Length: 444
Image 1 (tube, one colour):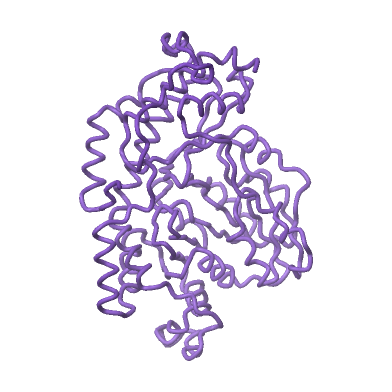
Image 2 (cartoon, rainbow, N blue to C red):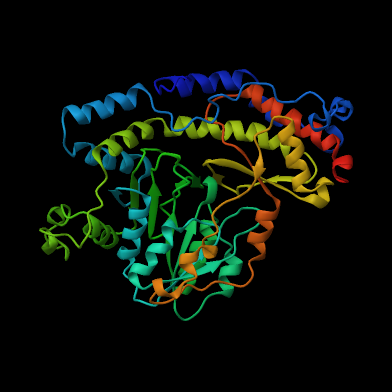
């Protein structure tokens, strides 16, 4: 089994990765005329040739990376049951991300549901939401009589398409909900400027984007509320857990009262929610102390881990994007992204000289773990198309060309969570080899 201990592992491994040349190799130009000549004469594995990828990928995408620190933290909760870890997590989170207010929740869905309650919008209010997004931040709108209005996704960022959203604005639009998909921040400056101009609130679904930032400002601190998931697959995993960022005291107290009956009695005496100290406002959404303990451990290594993954993906993507027709989910100016689940890329068939399907088939034969980009498209789910579940039914556009293009051209590569410079170099060699044969593949 691979070593999953945190202590010193990430820092030392990162040094080894850089020393090995993995990061330095990111500057190599391998596209267009620079495609290695040897690749052109090598027989494709698809046609019986040797695979380009022979390095072991075992453990390279392992997640979450729990080790001794996490075991000790959980054992401490078992030895001394109580809620102290919750307050400790919130304090550490506040110090790291510096939101005006924050509150932990049992999971990301409860953080999003509490956020919708905190916004206190009247029934019938429309919220602009991206179509390429799972249901977690959208379906709870039905509990409050809110109306999701599905918006297109940009075909090259996969994020909320502001220009399409502008066309869907009505007199009932009250808010925008954005998702920083796969860890790439949305264009929050433009979105917030538009929202301010139109008098709209902004809710950030940050489930994929812990530690991402724009011009040094963390994701989750741009809108009125930001909601994070700490589910086991997420960038900061705690098996289950969530966190909310709140722009002001009103949003914080309202969200905390909704799912934490123990909180109102702790609010200042002038709080209008203090009178609900015996009951809260209806739900119990407290994070489990063990989840809080795990999250606090992971927070300590978050900077190191996200930087390691950022460097590895840059080493890979900067070389692959030299090849004709390949582009990445590129960040804008001042953006410091993170990665969740996959490393998405796009293949333009016209520029690549072959279809995405032909490229994927050949790359798989070479040993690359690659597939067509496939992710949740909420407006196609049954629950959004059956009016019996809604006081006000969702608004679903007939056409979403950006989303269609993204799903037609997108591919997914692994998110490498440990240093694998040899594997990354072999991935590049595999792509080079396939691209050197793209003329013949284009005819298949």
